[in-house]
Image (cartoon, rainbow, N blue to C red; front, side, top):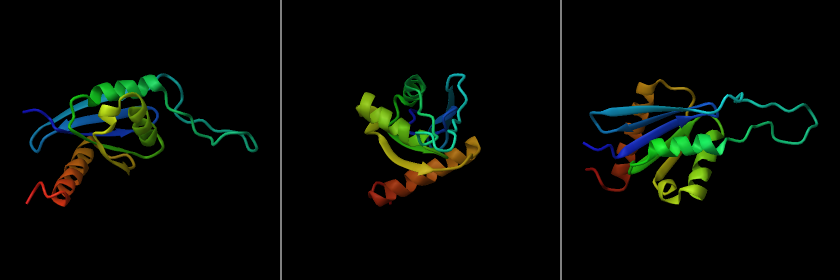
Length: 131
């Protein structure tokens, strides 16, 4: 059975991608390069104190999301928004499949899938796809 839904939890260092159905889960992981995921500026310096994501990292995540019909993107910081912007710019057909973006701290993989299943069930009910 093909996996229609996918969820990705990511920060600037690591991404957990899950393709799932109501009975099955397929898990993948992507890692950023060896750079330290946090960048802090000294007081009075220019910049927001956040390291921008690396395009190759977001390309690896996009490759893992390929084939998904609907995608939920979650994570604790700005990386989730950077991924969505990257998809919109470089892979708009995949970016169009992102139905939601949520702030989620650091769940276990099982908690992540449970959250995504609940999210998509509620979304389907709201759209009238499930009675």
